[in-house]
Image (cartoon, rainbow, N blue to C red):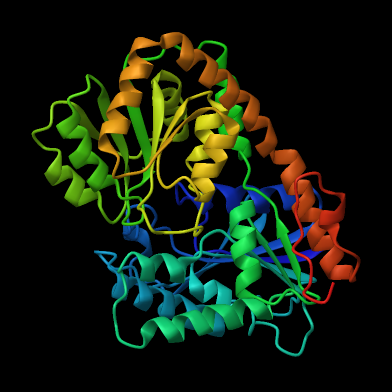
Length: 421
């Protein structure tokens, strides 16, 4: 197959979808497909272009034999709601004018949302060519931005939601990463003949290999250490948790290593906090080492964000057998996954006393932490790379040839029935 992958995050970006979509391209290339990638210049999670990319409008590269076209996108110094919208618009314009590879037409296009620009652009790239398109919904970015108050311009919410819905409906196939998000996706688009499937994220190859390398000689876990590692943005609500954590005086240390829109605010807030340590984003080897040392992995989520996303930092925690403290609402994708998996605790962000009590229980019962660790490792098998990426390959093949739903042969996919069935 000839496959065109469109993604804003790609190597050498770190965290979130960068590792996943780099790994997906690599996997499809290794399977013998003609894969080409259109993306932007590296900026994540620092929200800052690298010096060598400043002022460059387009660059043709290769990544492990994969043709890669990088397009200029506006990257704001401070990623506020309106500036992110402008960033999205700039990437949409770049995709609309320069995304395609000359004298080459794919059999299928694969793109991902959280950026609305990618969601919109997939509709226009091959107009009249009947190229099927798979859109992976990683994040309901419009709902998250509006619910968190990141965009408060009058009339804007209606227009953005209409644009998102129209873009989603235009795709040939839609997949998303949790059952709760699949239900929400079905509510946004009328299924009819459209493919709507649940295919989870996966533990990518380099991370899995690094964990295998370190597992045999893993150190003893640090006593009473919470680790937060990943994007530090508005939707995570980490600054609010930091305020609560400092008041608890629970005898635990919180280590935060990450970057993002809220990084500067957190650094200022934690400067004089003895129980909170700020560190930079680390390489994969150091990241795995940090997880293997930590008592538990902290994953925070703002309340009232509904079923908009499932944090990508969950999977490395599972793969390293690190118990999870999920600070979120119970009915979110994160809350349900942790509760049903039984490898951690789910506590509402506003229930500070319950958070403190849980940390106290974990402190006094190290054997319970061992049991949670075992369950985390067991659950990580569900997110195995080979099985999930083979399913994506099958779905792309089915789309390109007009075959029946590839998800029918998957043991984890759920299909939303059409309204006429």
